[in-house]
Length: 112
View 1 (tube, rainbow, N blue to C red):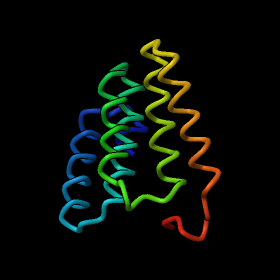
View 2: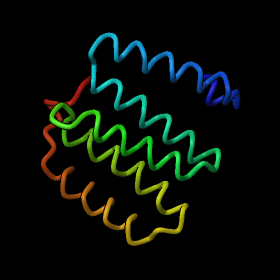
View 3: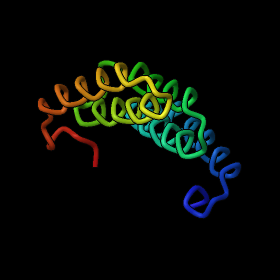
């Protein structure tokens, strides 16, 4: 809610706290989703390199744990940031990977 209401500093503190709690709980999927949300916020704030790095961290941190749907989401966040950076080739590559991976999704495997 703090992000949606424009309180970005507070939202970042909440995201970091949530990330620490997910780490304590050893919930890699939740941590990846939090990193994805942080990437979304960074793109919104114009911090495109940070946004791409956060999306990549979500991918790396959930390797072997994320469902295809989650992985596609993380790739879409990376593509979004890369597009804003003007790196259209890398954006296209990330979108292509997201599409390929998403085609393997099974909604029954996704977290609620």
